[in-house]
Image 1 (cartoon, one colour):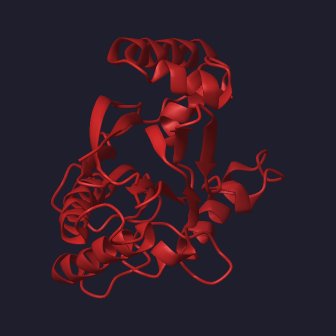
Image 2: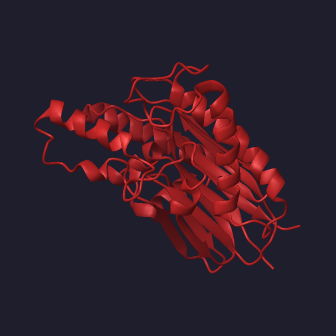
Length: 266
């Protein structure tokens, strides 16, 4: 049997440009996660944190811990059910701080790794990423979809129109046919991309800000990213190289977070 719990070997998060840290990551028992709070585009509600997305990421981290502990040993609860439990808890919390507001309530991309009786489930919402090393040494990359892919690129020369489309896209999230993200709706857990794999040795979870190292060629694909996440020193060097390149390119850097988990047997 492949049951067990997670332990972490690398956990690194760096703040990007232009706003406070809105990423977080964590693990408890058989569940691990990375949360990437969606930068505010709609008017903020003024929740009690550095920003609404930062408040959301911090509180979803705590609620996922509660849900993971409640789920019990590996194999007892599927990944979507763990996330649905956390989002149900979030909905109750949201009612106390934001009433019935949903559209302007903060949200996040998320990637979650849940150990099962015979392997691991990876759940991805929006543009966080996972790279899984199976027991046979092969690697599997899992993600969902880029957060803004639905607005297209044909309006990039018209920043006013592009912003209008981004606002509309944000307002339509978590509705049929649109992008689903972690927000208040437990249903989002069942709209995520969930991949069930065999026994895993290690899993690397990453926000899209960290995955930018792959997109800009700092490392070569999921294999290079996985290798760089194998130690704290190598991961720090990876993010430093990414920040250096982004500065050279004049690119605004997003928050970057990665978490490397190893399975420990009972």
